[in-house]
Length: 141
Image 1: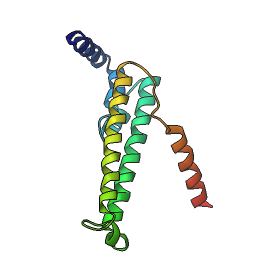
Image 2: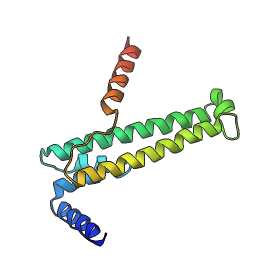
Image 3: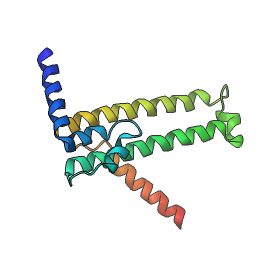
Image 4: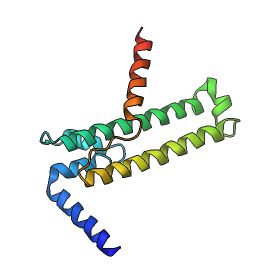
């Protein structure tokens, strides 16, 4: 077990020394990691660009989910159903908690994959993007 930890520490040290590859890992830090990567002057490294883009999408999804939950709990027309101590409050809080846990798990897997120089797309990423594109086209029409 100690050898595995030492191996992981050595890989992290080598990534830190090679700044561009370390940016792929930093991009998964909650809410601000992908912003830091966007402002860094980076090479056209395919790995960094991929992980930065994916981390940005994950962060946008979680912010939108939390905003929708906040609206449901605080908007006057929906507060009577979803507000604190109301009928659907446990359901909305469960969705909030599951979203947070899923966000953390996907971010940790993304960090691990970036550490191993792998390009890994989280499950259903493309399907979610397609559904959102179709939805925005319906709204525009």
